[in-house]
Image 1 (cartoon, helix red, strand yellow):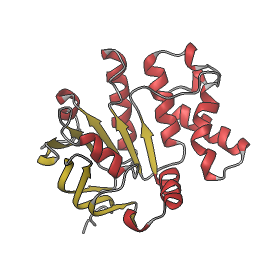
Image 2 (cartoon, one colour):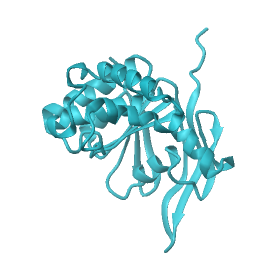
Image 3 (tube, one colour):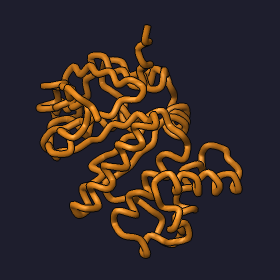
Length: 232
């Protein structure tokens, strides 16, 4: 009998409101299980970015419960939330956020700065992560010596170097040309096949349709949760 994969993210009746009576999330419930690859998709203002911030523990909900990697986010102090993010969540952003004067190894090693890992081990793990994203030939290159697609792969390696329970990719192809974007998405599929749980936040329906599961947001609510009939 096959066991059900462990939940990595659980949202229950989550709301998020801001001053001026702005309701960014309205009673959202969502479970993401270990090993999933899914898209959170919707137009600007739909609530998907707020959902990312809540799932990534960058923002606390107004009401409802949020569990990430087994932890109840509502019960954690800001310091413990920072530790949770450092140990269990990897972030990939549209614009890379790489340090311009540092080579690929040091940019990736910086992903372990808050994990108490010695410098030598940080760099060794960074080199392994860069090999994993097919950049073993670019270890000593700085961001200004890399293409856009290579920069994003460095950013993915940085997010993965701590072996997080969850990888959150926010518009990971938004700043890339078509060919580079396809390479990055192929890489995310490959990483998922080796066991990484990945959530891609996007407004691009083509990207969303290429993923096994799609969560559609509109006006702060989930309007659809669909899965592909066949996952390659």
